[in-house]
Length: 494
Ligand code: NDP
Image 1 (cartoon, protein in one colour):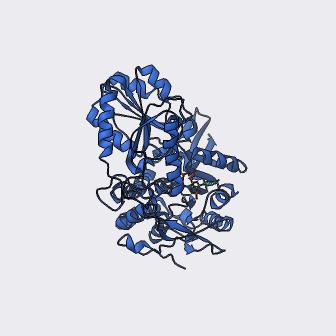
Image 2 (cartoon, rainbow, N blue to C red):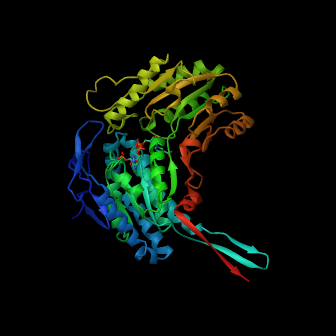
Image 3 (tube, protein in one colour):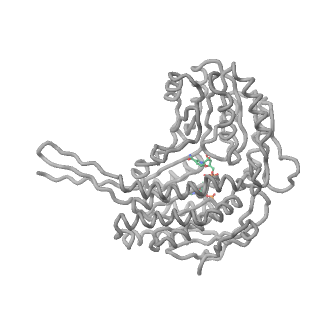
């Protein structure tokens, strides 16, 4: 049976896109035939069905991945592997428009965004890690005249790649490319809400010449379903998981039974620290993005905005005015800056925090409601809240939507104290033209990534991950290979 993926030229032709599992080189339905509906969050229409996998499909996928570890993939030399990874990148670029449409239909994000970031970055992830293997070395050590030691890299084995719904293709390829480059075989479990680009990605891997069983894909739900079966499976050697902190804790418990290697990219409640000497126009332009891009559904979004008091009023006035200009609506309209939230459940969760903000004494300065003229779709106006402090749940908990709080501060010490008073530690951005302060503050924030006078500027060689409950481990550049490969030290007595 083949998958029903046919290059859809427009959003209309996507109706009836049925997502099947991809196991051992073939697209297959669930053994029990179960499917669930895939909903477009911007229209609330059903756009296709998704095969609902469970333990049976996970067993088949893991068995295929395990067999493939000793198949043609292992026997290929680095040049042959690199050629396949490069072909995957080329095919993603070839199918860029189609993938951007699918990503926007699944997530509700604007097509200019999926077309300019998600899909090109997916291709670049493969190009980058294909190049990276050429520079990869392992250590060797001379032990006086007694012995020499050298380390060799080998794959970890079968790796589970589990992803959330906000950046489905970008994040899946961020894991898949290095996992494959390091010689592993994989089972991908995309979020149930965003199955389409993962399905095309599996097809692309097949078309690029990937041997059967190396890349497997099982759709389905997380708890008590495909996700749980995958993390519990004794033949899975490592799990790369991106998602909520609470899910990460559950997975860690299941993975403990077979002591799997884990890489975690989890939730965040990231601060922006804006000092009065920063260039205000630059600050506003970037803060609009760090607050509302992708409907605020990016783990790196800065949702706690701290502004030094002398700049507070001016910042707020300009920030609110620019936020009101953001067009919310149809992801397929080029004017749209903010699309639809991912689902009804998530819309209810995000808006419950707006209600809570009022109960906690906050003021909704702009936004806070569904924009006029929409009776379908999970649209929400970008929302700015003031008047809250660190004791409030709205300031402490991850909302993961287009909702930010703005809080004034007086001193560097005071703001650092507030910023670090959280169990999250993913990212932060600092805005100042004072060189010494920039270094001092950046080095004092408890976060895995700190940007100075910018946001979300990524060099894929750099370590990516979170501190505290925002993550475990780092990926990116050599750090990805530290996770996706095992080192064996060989000691030779002289
Ligand atoms: P979830 O944790 O709910 O889900 C993530 C993935 O895990 C989904 O595929 C989900 O399946 C699956 N899953 C859920 N429960 C289990 C389980 N018990 N066992 C195995 N798999 C399971 O996250 P969301 O999808 O809601 O994504 C939003 C979160 O992701 C936010 O907290 C955000 O901060 C974080 N994130 C972090 C990033 C980072 O780099 N630090 C980047 C992007 C997002 P299903 O969807 O089918 O339930």
